[in-house]
Image 1 (spheres, chains in turn green, cyan):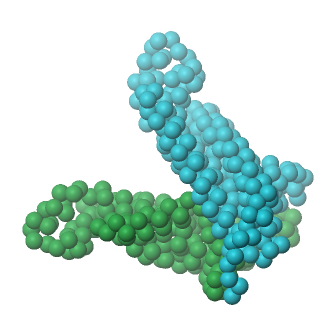
Image 2 (cartoon, chains in turn green, purple; image 1 turned 135 degrees about the vertical axis):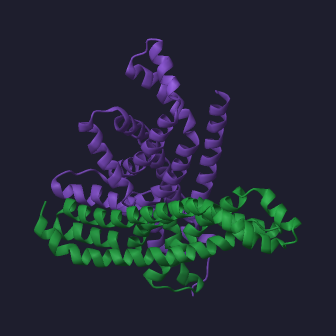
Image 3 (tube, each protein chain N blue to C red; image 1 turned 180 degrees about the horizontal axis):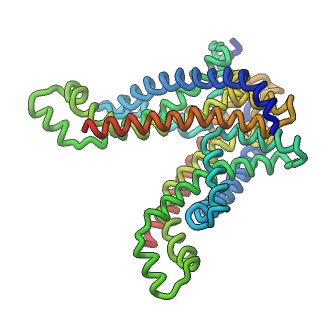
Length: 216
Length: 219
């Protein structure tokens, strides 16, 4: 182990890890927003909307995230959408994880007992009101863990945008493996930074889950 | 804006088809290896002495916390610098297998742990040795119970096999890239590749449903 090398490269890698964090947060936000929308479509009463939501989930979960990134970044200009690598990467990752988020949100809503909705309706609440004030708060608790699993997968998935030259952690690691000929030192530094993010996020999710469980 | 033209896709079918074939071969090989290694790691984590158990746990922890792409870079670009030269195809298969073996091992471990302790006691009282009990009684039942979870992993593996294109293996994505470098039509060919993955995925899901039904019947 070349400790001096690790000390020298660390600042560059911390900077790159920060880009990974930014990417993760942006695509997480987009993924949750689009995911909630798609879950809403899948739970709708209108068959057309259900079909659209189902198709979204099926297409984005049925094809590789790498190709979704390539289609948006390299294919986009052909249909008039020209994006910087970072933006293209964040949007592609967000749209991809949205399909998984949608299924977790839908799963949460469906696991709330039907009687809850029926009870609220019979007390005179409208359907939207019952959903907003009764079903969703209960569903939220059930969703934390599955949504968290998706978020962790997303953090690791951000590595894929290295392929479109976004200077995040994996891209930086690849460049330094090529220039220093010290693959294990580079892997060690990169792995530690990823694991701080991944296992840190896991801890946050555990906390949230436990806080909700105590409240209930 | 160039506009889209899918009429040129069939002309390049031979190359794309070859990539498709390699995607199937690499995914299938990695699926089998990742399941075999997963069972091995699970047994080590549960039953092996600490000197073996802790290194395997450390390895699992490392590989679960880092992205597949980074692991592939380490295996393909990294190991060669310390004198270990593994050809690209094998680097890809080894990387995919190791990456998924870790998740499979976790599933198997949980599956074995969830089995009723009575199974082990019954087998032992019938005269089975400790390892006989594990191999003939515990593992087969755990395997059966974990079929759906392992199936989901294999669906992920098929899609993530696309990542080995980044170390130059001529599978589906890489073939698409070759064609694109000639035709300058990324949208058409990446979409074609995506459609082929979608079809492969449907086939795999159908196969897995078949296996699940068989396993259900054997209960």
